[in-house]
Structures are given as C-alpha cells and as structure tokens.
Image (tube, rainbow, N blue to C red; front, side, top):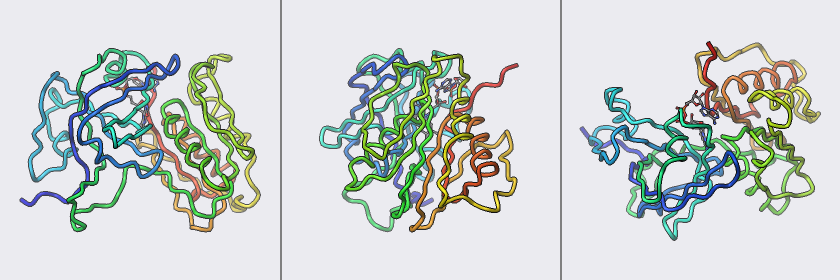
Length: 306
Ligand SMILES: Cc1cc2nc3c(=O)[nH]c(=O)nc-3n(C[C@H](O)[C@H](O)[C@H](O)COP(=O)(O)OP(=O)(O)OC[C@H]3O[C@@H](n4cnc5c(N)ncnc54)[C@H](O)[C@@H]3O)c2cc1C
C-alpha cells in the first residue's frame, strides 16, 4: 500500500533543560535534529507527546499508517500514553522547542513525567513538519492549531485556564506585535497567584488573572462567572439568540469559529471540558453571541467524582 500523504512526522526528542516558572508551571526544553522542521503556524500550535510504557522502546511505524493510526492500533497494555501540548517557543536554528507543563500531580503520565524526568530523558512527538525536499503533492492540509482571527477583528475575547495559558500568552505576544493591536478582553484562570505569568501589555488590553487560591474557587468557576458578566460588544449581539444545541456530556468540546474575514469580533476559549460546555451555552444561548465567532476547546477533562 502506498505511503499516506501527510506532514505529521514522528521523532524522538530529548530533554535538554528544565525551568520552574511558578508553582504550577515547568518549562521543558527539548532538542532533536528534526526540531528544525517543526512548524508553528499559530501561537496555539500543538504537538502530540508520547510517553512510552516501556522506557527506551523504539518506534517502527508501518508505511501504510500515520503515526497516530499506528499508536491507536497497538494493544492497550503496551500502547503508550499520548497527550497534546502547546509549542510555547520554537528555536529552529538551535533545534529547540519549549513546552510549558502544568504540574497537576503524579496521577497523569504527562504531569508525572514532567516532574520526574531528568536531563537527557527521551520521549517521542508527532508534529507538523515541513521538509526541504517536500513535494507539493505530498502536502496535507496544515493543522493542529485553531487561532485564526479574521483580518477585520477589532475586539477579541480570550478565556483560558492554566493548560491553555501557554497558547493564550503566545496569542497576546502575537497581537502585541501588530502595528495596531486590537482591543482584547482576557480572563486567565490559574491555580495560584504566583502562576500569573508575565504577558505583554498595551492600552487596549484588559487582562484579568483569576487565581483559584484567592478564595476557594473550583476549577473553571471563575471563567464561568466571567462569561456571565463580560460586556458583549453591541456589534456582535445576535438578536435572535441561539438555538439550544448542547454538546452531550460524553462528547468532547471542540468547536471552531467560522468567522467571515470582515467580522469585527473573535473569541478563543479553552480549558477544562465541562467548564467549556457551560461557557459555550452561557455566551451563545444566554448572552447572544454568534457561535460562528467563537472557538471552544476542551483541553482536559476533570475526573468524575464518585
Ligand atoms: C490542544 C491542546 C494543547 C494543550 N497544551 C497544554 C500545555 O501547553 N500545557 C499543559 O500543561 N497542558 C496542555 N494541554 C492539556 C493536557 O493535554 C492535559 O491536561 C492532559 O490531560 C495532561 O495529561 P496527564 O497525563 O498529565 O493527565 P491525565 O492522564 O490526562 O489525567 C490524569 C488525571 O489528572 C487530571 N488532570 C489532567 N490535567 C489536569 C490539569 N491540568 N489540572 C488538574 N488535573 C488534571 C485528570 O482529570 C485525571 O483525573 C493541552 C491540551 C490540548 C487539547
């Protein structure tokens, strides 16, 4: 069978640096020759990180499968854990990529690895790459990012919890570099006050960090409160309100905006899945925002309490 056309490459990456940014964030820098081919088309570009169950095990993807299909085909007992993480910084000239991990404890393989891994430790990544000898006919659609604001956007709403903070700060950095940065309202929920990481600022930016330890807030609760109170720009209110199209509990929340190029408003909202479900309904059904202008991404799922 012919090799599938795709730009996703699987390769090994080595931990070259660890830097504690705050109580909840650890920046891990990875190196590998192939990092120079990695692509970050947008500040929320993500890669898949693969944490092998058997340390040191290699990867041999059959020609007729994509790396992801191959992993899905493995029996569960030996199938490695795969998690999505955002490219925080990419330095192709020195073959390095930074990923900011939320340290949420040792119960998750990714968080546990970030806590324990020593310099030199290796994992695999599946990532969008472009190679110099790449032929146009081999090019699949570029992907693994959502941020794609309309050219006419004048007002932007960003909502993120800690898992989406690396992407959200990257978005602020990109906007701040524009000749005329747009008006941005941003709510970033983090576990601790010390997790309020620095961001660029400009006169049109209204950023509120919402640390959960100032009070006894549950994860997502302050973002939900913000969705109830945020001022909705008059120009985007949808007079008819939205029909009720709740996303069922078992489905992931992943809704991309479909905004026209001349849309004035755009929103990027990511965090814990059940909070995303509530915020989506609040902003569309109750607050009357047109869902075509909104991106909602469930970045992780809170364990059910029994
Ligand atoms: C596109 C995308 C980009 C992402 N980028 C980043 C990123 O840059 N940095 C980052 O840290 N995360 C990021 N995430 C989220 C990350 O993939 C999840 O948090 C993932 O579940 C962590 O895997 P784990 O193995 O540590 O825990 P899991 O095995 O998935 O979960 C184990 C337990 O931990 C809980 N849990 C998982 N994540 C958290 C958390 N953050 N806080 C508290 N409890 C948690 C689960 O509810 C479960 O009970 C991203 C997710 C997506 C979809």
